[in-house]
Every structure is written in structure tokens, then in C-alpha cells.
Image (cartoon, rainbow, N blue to C red; front, side, top):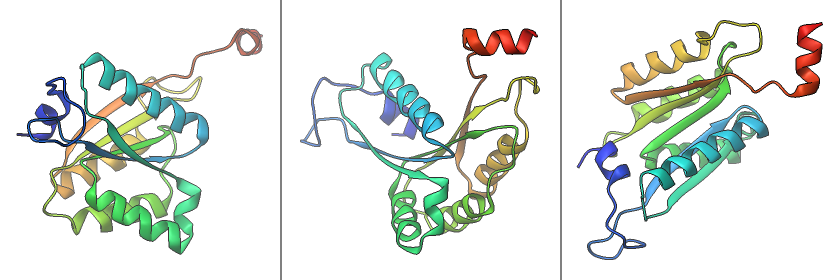
Length: 168
């Protein structure tokens, strides 16, 4: 069963009992708290819309925490065991070196778990609709590592207060 089939299958059972859906291990690496929450919300919405009964087991790591040795070691283990790695970032900027270098090292050492790399990218106001810097980095990394690659690209919603500033 491939990753997409495993994620979308549902038989109405909870947990890992015989015949039940297996948990999907997800790692979320995120640039800031807002993007992290948006990516988690998208994943839970996708899980609900697919009718998936087994829980997503999600480990979350903010980019800034990857500098610390302890966090970096645990993030590496999480990525090595994950079936889905989500990177939530501003797509108009280049990803930090510790994120791309870490992912490159971590993904090349894993040959036993079927994995997918998912880009959750947000474009800045006034920038091109399609973010290209982070997308290009992640797409290249997925191709070089032999991973499936998926991308969700969005533009931040403009609040009423910000809309007045943008229009002026």
C-alpha cells in the first residue's frame, strides 16, 4: 500500500489493532507559530475530509529549535521515522541552511520508510502568486531523495485593517 492509499484508507477502527488503520507519523517543521498552526489545521481538515479514523501522530519542530543539539537529534529521529514531512514556511524566502542541510542528511539515511515531503508555503502580499525559492529547494530535495512531493501554496488573508493600509 503506498503512502497516499494508506493515508486515505479508512475502515472505521481506531488505533493499531489488527485490521485497523495504522497511524501515520507526520513531522512538521515550521518557520513561525502562525504557519505551524495553519499547517496543522490543514492536515486535520484533510484527515477529516478523507474520513480517516486513525490518528495522525504529529511531531512539530520550529526552525529556530533545530540549532540546539538536543532538539536536532530528536528532530532527526522524528524525520527518519515519519511517513510525511511537512515544511511550513514563507515561500518567497530561502529556507534556513539548518533546515535544508538537516533534511538532506536525515532523508538520505532513511531507506526503509516510504516518505513524502509536503511544502506548505505562503506567499507575501505583493509577491508573485507562486512562491519559488522555498518551493524550488524542497522540490529539488524531494527529487534527490526519491520522495513524493506535494505542495500547498496560499496567500495570507488580508484583514480589514491591513486592507486599508494596502489600499492607501
